[in-house]
Length: 388
Image (cartoon, rainbow, N blue to C red):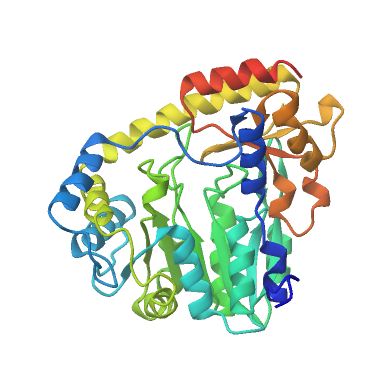
């Protein structure tokens, strides 16, 4: 058999990820890895204890295909308590192997070949790959500068909707920029979805990690959107357990059913003993989550100060694990090459934002730094950044 690349054409652009490349460089040069977005501390102790107990109790075989009942009920209760959204845990909540599988299930289950899917640029890299798997066509709408932050280009958004549009993927709080979409942005997305009869899939995995007194508004709470929105979240970022891969989808039964149809042939089920542990955390550890968000806000401030002191222009981060920084004041305008040089040059790894875009030009300079790290790790990164 030929050793040539046998990957299908539509997936060849996705054979490697920037995270693998930057993490490998970090290891090679013993660098502080601020590239990949995962925390380096564990979640609440009682959640870890609940997982151990579930393993001891023998909950180690296939869970139900839609997820264990206590987790589906906890997901539904949390959304009701926080946002007034009422979901039937037996028909309108589906547990998935992380939010990435939830997104994949929704896209593959709902997008026909040739359908157009609108995405906000920059975008989480799995979005583009998933649309390609479904045979869809992505249409990107950019964020644009708004002072030291970003906002949605609502004129470009309206122009992107058309007769072939079947879905819009909305990520807020936004990775990689840390932007929280404004009420005006969300209202315009909702108006266009209703007008064009389009399904919205909302990636809200950072919903609880918002800063400076801001609040998160689910798109599903806006008029006309409950019936056409699949709302996705997960335990990974909320409870510092990215390796557990426990996510969920909430929405009207027909959309959840379509997602399940695709999802059941991806993993079938997963995370058996972790599901009851996450249910426990949703019921008992939301106070821990609030404290975690405050701690992350302080970490954001520390890394932002370190980047400013090093000579970067730093963008506003309103949520998430991430802050974006502009190295052009340092005489650098190629973010990809700069990121490739940083681990060897000063022992710090970041990722270039342009790899999350179709139109790289407006983003070619920008870098993303992850700050969900222990304070001593951020302090070491700050010391190394001074070498610039």
